Length: 221
Image 1 (cartoon, rainbow, N blue to C red):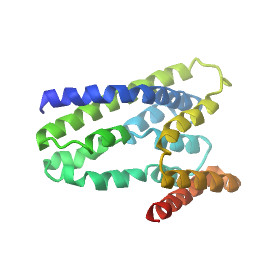
Image 2: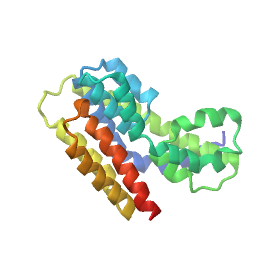
Image 3: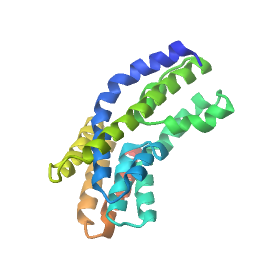
Image 4: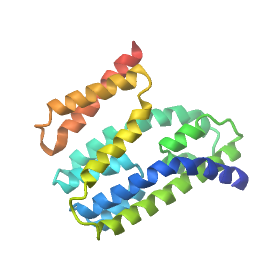
């Protein structure tokens, strides 16, 4: 481990976590108010380590949806990580085997955004990556713990269901600066609205798939 590079990664990651921390707290509160056991919801932070996929899974499971439906929805939501992984292949190619197996676990949006553009030599790059990822994972689990604690004492009906979409809007809107993302978002919203009749919020899954196809077509053109 090259500790100066690891500390640099932590310093670069810290400002990006200011927006993610409230999301983790709200997710923790959502777990506490759902029918999913608190321990299972908290453990999902370690097993999935992806806020949007966790939220979709917990919401669907809490409403009684089949586990297969929750898994499919989480995979669609996290489909962007396939592109992240493909883009990071040149960075991982010169890393030791243990890192090629374990490193992708920490590949979240913020880590990809900062690490994909760095050209450090392999050890320094790996230390930078690990510093960022470990800090992000630690913050996420702390945020979920805070949310679970608050969820046990916060009364129902304080607008948490409204707060979650607002958090998602805050995450998505800044990315809508090119035509393909705009097309994908519009198509996803329209299709999801037209398929609200599908059980267990399946319209969200259908809308997401339609949006990805529309975005890919727009990008190709």
